[in-house]
Image 1 (cartoon, rainbow, N blue to C red):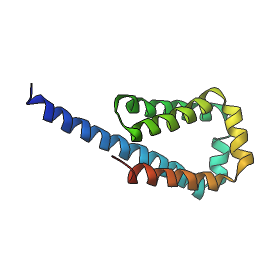
Image 2 (cartoon, rainbow, N blue to C red):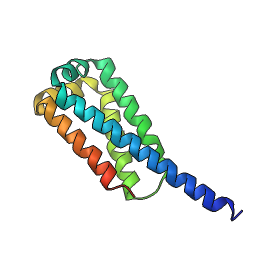
Image 3 (cartoon, rainbow, N blue to C red):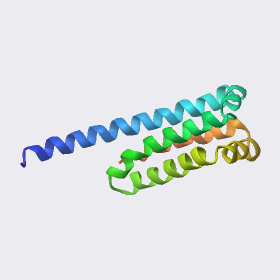
Image 4 (cartoon, helix red, strand yellow):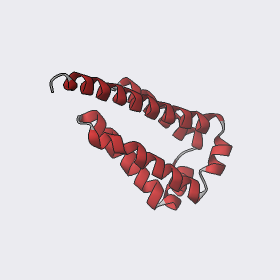
Amino acid sequence: MERDAPASNSLNRVSRTIYIAVLANFLLISGLCHVVAPSSTDHWMSNNRTVRSMGAVLLVLAIPCVLWRGWYFWTLLLALAVSGIWRLCFPQNSIRAQQTLYPRHVHGLLLIGGAFLVWALRP
């Protein structure tokens, strides 16, 4: 049984690294879309169906955080779950907030900053 423990731990470490890379890249690409093409992004993200889909994607991305321990994954779980539930259950509120609080490119910069934080703070 002791032989399996290091292999399992190594696999767990690799899967966490892959997860973090996928999440950081997802945030970075999304942020770049917001910055480079704000009008196109605004067009797509003004559609209830698209916003709900993004909410569902965020909730799926939150699932692995339930399995892993530590402040890092609990923080990601909270951020992804809250954002995902808000977009999935209240898409019109999400759209309105995005359109009235700040310009689309500002949201893009926040997403890019989030991507760098996800990568820089990784355990």
